[in-house]
Amino acid sequence: MRTHGSLCVAIAVEPVEGEGEESLVLSTEKFEHLGFLFYFGDKGSEGYHLGQYAPFFANSDPDMPAVPVPAAQVHDWVLQNIVSSLENISERISPKENGPPSSSDQDVPMADACTSTNKGSINVRGPSFIEGISKSSLIKQASDLKGSSVKVLNCHDSVIYILAPLRYATVYGCSDATIVLGAVGKAVRIEHCERVHVITAAKRICIANCRECMFFLGVNQRPLIVGDNHKLQVAPYNTFYGQLEEHMNEVGIDATVNRWNEPLALGVVDPHDSLSHPAGVSDAQAESGSHLDPEQFTNFLIPNWYGGESEGSTKDNPFPLPDIYVASQHRNQNNLGEVKQLLREAPLEENKKRELSTALHVYFKDWLYASGNIRQLYCLQGE
Image (tube, rainbow, N blue to C red; front, side, top):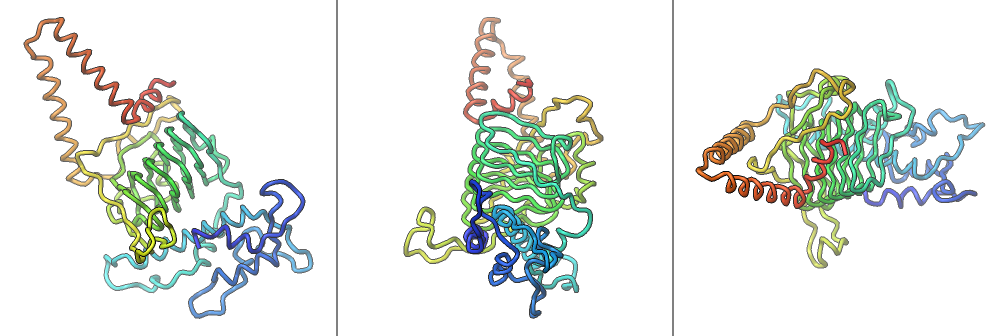
């Protein structure tokens, strides 16, 4: 349903006058037809009308039908609730750590995810879009966003900082980028990305159809991995900014619980995908994520462009690091100190010391470009 959600919605689309996506809409009647594909209600019950759960058709007057809704909006809503349902499933099948299952460990249909989204204080403004950023750096704070959801789409070879409390965040179609998401209280979805580093503090995260990506996570629920993924790595959270703990408290993230190292792979690889699944091969379990080697783990520094505006009480990573990663950091720091000491005490003439210093700078510059870290240096300089 995640992969073919757009086709499911297209079944009910009614073309109207207009251009592009504006010409594709769904009426209340056509939207109800999707109820044959999406089940709402408790297991074994008769279910409910789909329109009762959609924010754009809820409580419509039968004598005055609701205005048709753009198909793209319906598609986003369907995907969001499928992801929420999958996350609920992952929580239920996770090993119970505190005794026998409780009364809350019951089947959770899409309705549960939807109603929890529609209750309480809802920000009616749509998501903020960050799209098409290339070979650049971008920072967004809470004052720069129009709502509590963000979508980062088709960004390449860039560093993007979203330092704000959020409900939902989506990263789609990005490559060769580093993306920092502040504090996400509901869910993060990463989809169709390649060679992307994602750093986030979140309640939960869902990763789908990604390749060669690395995730530095502070998450309260097990990372959910679905679809066709290759060479994913997960690691503990590795950064901070001044208002991080304030934002985490605002959206309800617990820094004492970090399940970054418990990725859960659901489903099987699509046997019809000829690129990654050759013909004749039976269904294979979806690939999970491996743990980053502690020797490769480094802290990530977020520049403070705005001075006082970014000041806050957070002075360090709020998520405790596992002992093996702490030990590795100490070893690396000690090794660096020893190298510095050897260079200072090297019995070289002044001209030889200058040659050595020049050679070290050249190698370091080459590494900056080869690793892509030169972009971070530009950020620190304020570009």
